[in-house]
Length: 552
Image (cartoon, rainbow, N blue to C red; front, side):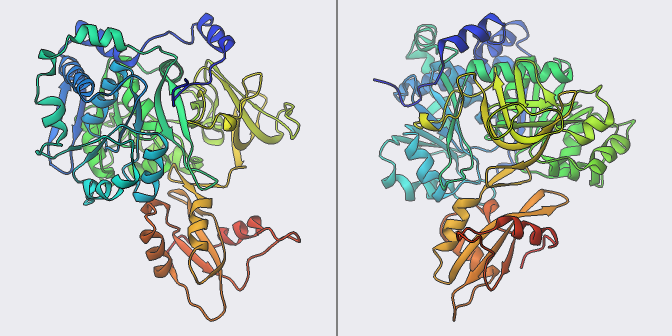
């Protein structure tokens, strides 16, 4: 009987990737064990918990000890290989340790963004049949245990909820760390028996959906590690670098290039759980951080922060920018005012970073493209018939290679990979004669707000449920900081009223994550339609281009 998280992995792909040396058949815990043995006192992770006010630094040996005890605690909770362990945690050390513990025993990690609320979680946890969920007691003033308590009746597979920051019987520490599980189990035998195949699914990450429900992207140890290795090689990162991550670890950016990358480099990860540019600079300079990655708004805020260092004092030397196009002036200002190399990148949950610029690329490539394919990956731009276009032609972007995912959870028909391994990304692009791509649009109806995808159809569906709404459409509104914001265009029924406050309250009541709420509302007598009745979103996008991104 197939498991819930069965990968789609044709034997020829395994053979080709292994023969090429792209898949090394290692697990992330192997890197942890290497450093814990060779350099046990080397610092592995430093975090700051904004809720407790405490900072924690762990050496590789300390991290290994916590990982192993947590892993045995999961065994005691009857978590089996292939079971899904979900965790909705901020950028705290517990996120890192919990994922490594899942890898240790063959469980599947399902990171969930801290912004998700009832609407998202009721679907995600049930669809993945999550056995265990870990949440914070509080984060940014929100009560997570209370939210989950209200959902438990809808989640028959969820057997246990553990809470970070709770001293009670369901506390993360009291259940997993304060008991000496190593006295009850033979750790070596348990870990050897449960060690997963590197081609087994190790990560389940939901994407923002375009059809009302998100899809669960499945990645293996081999696919993830191959992508991180190629990324580090492309921009010359090494164990001498210190990595800083403020993007959520529950996003592929934070997961692969915040959590995984330092472990694989045998270096140190410094975490920030609530974004603040001035606090980030204090951390970067104090901790001698040399590398970071984030969406365009992170870079914009760093450039304009009051305490931004000068080029001769700035510790940060490389910043990889993805999730939205980099405004040329922003990249140039960062290079001039801070002295850092700005790296442009394009990727998605399904393939990690697939293209990026290199530090020695010409400025016009860095400021005017989304890079070229990483080693082990390939990209191409095709026409409507799937034939490669000549340089400069615009069309659908396809990718394939070592970091490409291995299917959508319980939706094999949605995989979208052809017989030759090409995956249709849903983006439109152009490629120049040197192989550099530039994303020009999206076939998918998704808005990217500061690197986060807005599930347009889901928001529209909720608006349509309001008794005053006749028609509704969400489109992107350009924004100089976030790249895009969401603008709602609606037509109301005769004799009814609707305004921005009403919209915000309606969507919040439905459990929609705050970051998904449209930031501007425009009421029109009627939405433009084609002769067949379809709303003409291109006309609305043109209208949105002339709007300021204030809310009303």
